[in-house]
Amino acid sequence: MSNYHQIESDDRADDGNNLEFRSFLGNDSTTEPAPGRGYLRDQPTQSSFWNIEYYQPYFDVDTNTVLKRCYYTMVPNVDYLTNHLSPSPDLYGPFWTLSTMAFSLFVFSSLASSIASYLSSEPFDFDFKLLSIAVSLCYAYGLGLPLALWLALRYLGVTDWSLVEAIAIFGYGQFIWIPVSLLCVIPVPILRWALCGIAFGLSGWFLVANVYPILQTAEAKATRLIAIVIFVLHAALALTLKIQFFSYYVIEPIGGSDPITGPSPTGTSRF
Image 1: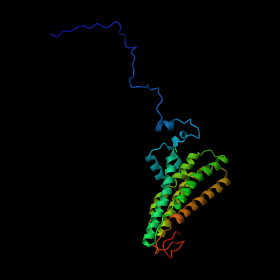
Image 2: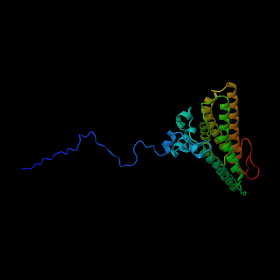
Image 3: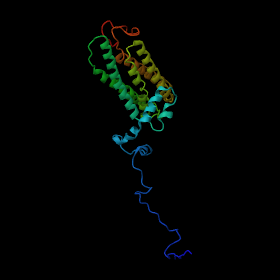
Image 4: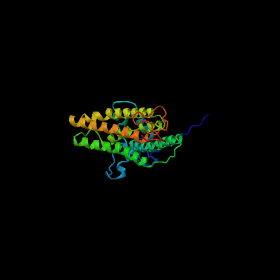
């Protein structure tokens, strides 16, 4: 037979309404989260314009996002800013794209020149001036032009476009020149012109699709003038890159002579 013992309740115990729960995990839930990736995006920085902390949120982006944004610049789409840069345009991607573009122009141009020199039995020396030219062209077009455009639009009363968005559009839009730089190592003049034409067309279409809607909000005459200036500068960039960096071929051109500059009678040529 089982024995049961009656346990008397403690008179000091209450009915459970006054129970108190304590956390031993550290800070309570009301503590603000430590600054991190998501925190910086949700909380605007209070730093001064001249401090590095002011620009930190614009470089707070992961590699997959940057590569995705680079890829979609080569796929014709109408609203890149809304579909791929929203809600947080960044500066890291454009800086990375322009820097890689300048490096690719110098490296692959030098590689193409060395191959042409080897096939032509000619001596080859690295032209390090090409590196400074590449850096100047890339940053002047990818950073200087959007800055000038943003200032012009602000003067015309257009405030729908931020400076970060302008730099992101022009910076990411030059990504196509990186694979083209690699492919232009092939010593076939016609192929190089075709590749540069494709890069000019894709990057030009990208700018038209994403910049022209902003220009339409400005005065009509000013819009046409700005659009013409951008087109001329874009065409000048493409032509300069082709002539300055992708015009090496051997003494006997492969695939026919260059349609504009003609064959080189002796050794390698840049034109």
